[in-house]
Image 1: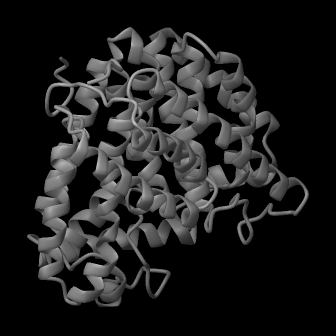
Image 2 (image 1 turned 60 degrees about the vertical axis):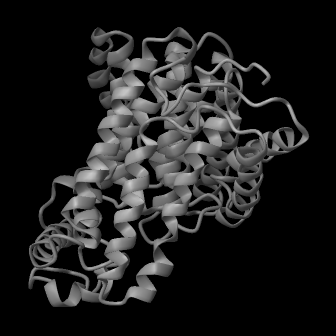
Length: 392
């Protein structure tokens, strides 16, 4: 029995349904960084098979403990929908809470050694996605702010966020893994190059924080590598990349000015709607009413900040629930990091959370379906790895 889960842990018998569900889970993870349409279709079938397993072969264990705040967060989202200025639109656009089912699905199907197999699949598809991005940059001339590498994703922000998470998987396996380190070493350079050429600052900073955390977990003295790595980066990176990094500190940069305006607008939304927010996906509807004169864009779809977006959309209670979720995840991952069989996966999970929080100060990544699904996979794997696979 493990204290990491909502209930005591046992594992499914190897039935035909479970076997097919496991195969679909592998396919789902492989599709995540390549196609939102394919991954969504696969997930729908996967959830149906998981539901069948829950009914026909119930297990004592259902999900890690951090799933509880996610459930309550989803419930509060529905309450926010009820008080939205456009309830029907908010209800339709709140379907992302269904993605939280990734947690119990992965926990049920990726137990024991299977968790490491999922991580290997993540690295493999990450290599494919990285190659696509590098080809776009080097051959198709996706090398400027108007046209950036996006892999097979619809937006470079999504693509860079996924690469950021996959980098943490590669580095954690190199530092803490007991096998298959060579594959991670081979994949990592392509992942880094692909991320850098997206010119996406939030993901670059997020990746740096995530990797820095992994180095500190391994040996705090390894943090000394950071200045050396920064010097090498400045020496070899293209001018467009260096200029993009420097622009972060330019208060006259239009993007930076607009982000500050979003903070002002979002804060005003929270002040006017502190309990249930303006409603899911309603920020863009009311943004013009709150936009300060310093704003650059007339309308913004979201506020490019996870805590502020949640508070503005769903109210301060939703923000507290999200914070509870983060605390629960980090607490469980720290405990799982102390277990040899889940150390590498837990390290990747901790780094992924650090990446999400860092990049999430500048991008609403928690609301990006592809990013959210991969994040949920990574933070669930360590708990699943601690479950020994034994038949009923």
